[in-house]
Length: 207
Ligand code: SF4
Image (spheres, rainbow, N blue to C red):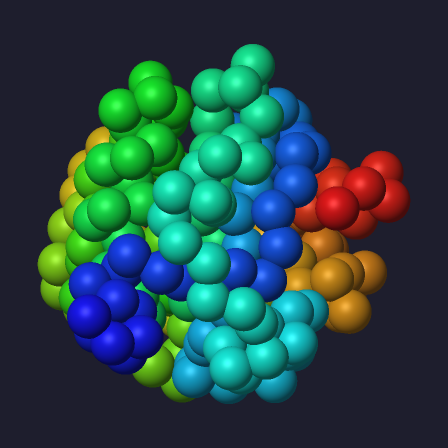
């Protein structure tokens, strides 16, 4: 099988980095986790804090077996992030992790077809490329990044599309956090279905 076929089937993936840390954002904030960050994203958010992930060609294509081998065994929760992981076929990676009794968490913009078997699906929609209907329906958590007041309206429109049990979070964009934080706090007080998500890993200065 040629390299491109293996990438298409998800047997190899562009691994940007993998590390253990704490989940810094959203519903599982503070949870010890192992992160697998995959290269590749074409959404193009101007405030993206991992722009180095966009071009997957910068990263080595690693077999799923080798990616999973590195996973620290005493950590149960594995967070697959990017980049945009759903640009790739996640079936083999998630099945291999689950065979090792790991919980699989996804961080995604939801703009691509869903693959993989997920215990937790965190949807962070982006205006540049909207989530699919399937992603809205599947989301366990909706996390909308707030850069300015217009994003609050975007957040409400997204919230109309998720299921009733989906947890709703507003997260200040880090570079604008002072302004965004006060927008969010004022908004949540009036709209208590939302909670705030802070990027605690950035405050703690951990990866
Ligand atoms: Fe960056 Fe995520 Fe936006 Fe892609 S979807 S550009 S990785 S913030």
